[in-house]
Amino acid sequence: MSPKCPHCGESLQAFAVPEEGGWDSSFHVACFNDECPYFVRGRRRMEDVYGVKVSYRYRIDPTTGQSSPLAVWSMDALKDRILDAEITTDIGPADPESSGTTP
Image (cartoon, rainbow, N blue to C red; front, side):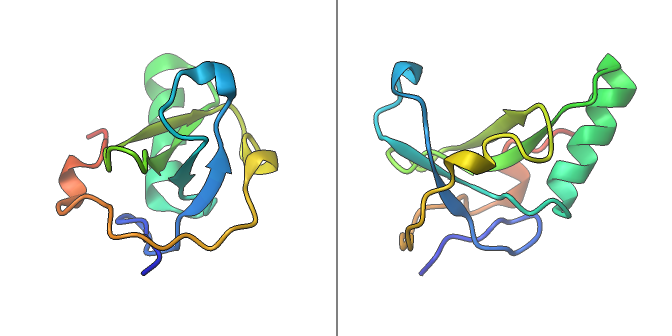
């Protein structure tokens, strides 16, 4: 089963993480849906609170199963790192409220 974003229901996509990032795996999975409420709300919040035009996407570390925000500086940020791979896993948070969502 392909993991889904708890905020929009789209399939998460694998993307390569930088080697120097210190991660335990060479990839993470994230929601790259530009219409995802988490991404849209994040952009609005970051601009309102910090005055910057950035956002974050929903991400899961496949090694730990932990979700966290993935900071992005534009709508296209990190899309060049998306891997052409079918991801099947049973990881993912049981509760979308504990998925790194900012109130």
